[in-house]
Amino acid sequence: MKKYLLFICLFTFLYSQEDYYKITYTGESADVQIFKKDKSDRAYGNIYFPLASDGDLGVIFKSEKSREKFLNFMNSSYDKFKEWESTAIKNDVRDFNKEINKEIIGDTFYFHYGSWQFNYSGIQLKTAIRINEEGNAFFILTIPSKASGSNQYIKSDANAEVINDLGMEEIRSALSNDVINRVLSEKEDLDSLFQ
Image (cartoon, rainbow, N blue to C red; front, side, top):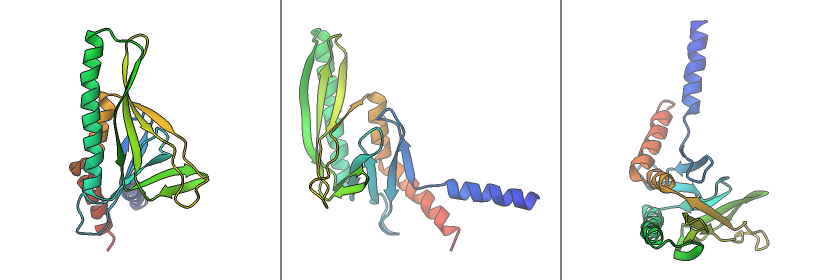
């Protein structure tokens, strides 16, 4: 009986390890999937990064350069947002919208529409500040509608996500070399048990 119980515990532990990182920056839990290209490739795996709260659309980063471009875009946009938010508070600004930045991000765009659809180019993301009538400022990431690469009539829904300080920290963490290397290392360690 003890051997049977030990086997179940070991089996459950081994197969509960998966190659993703969970984030909740969008208000709901979504998975950042990390797939290593080959054994020598550290921190350069394909990263499937969700852009919507339901995880049904996102971008794939195929290189560290592509991932860093997204992080730089988000960091510089958020820094500008914080600067403008401070200015808005000092000047009692209300009911105001302004685009902060826009840039083509990612190597592949994916979305779910009956089945998974892919467009093998990046997507132009936009960031903006939105100040409501009460004077509360919000950082908005806008994802436009985009057609599938295999059928021009299948398009993703446009989406907008509100991201706060905690959300920005989760984005930075999920796409950091440390987290990516840790996830890939855990996967390697698990794979090495079954050679």
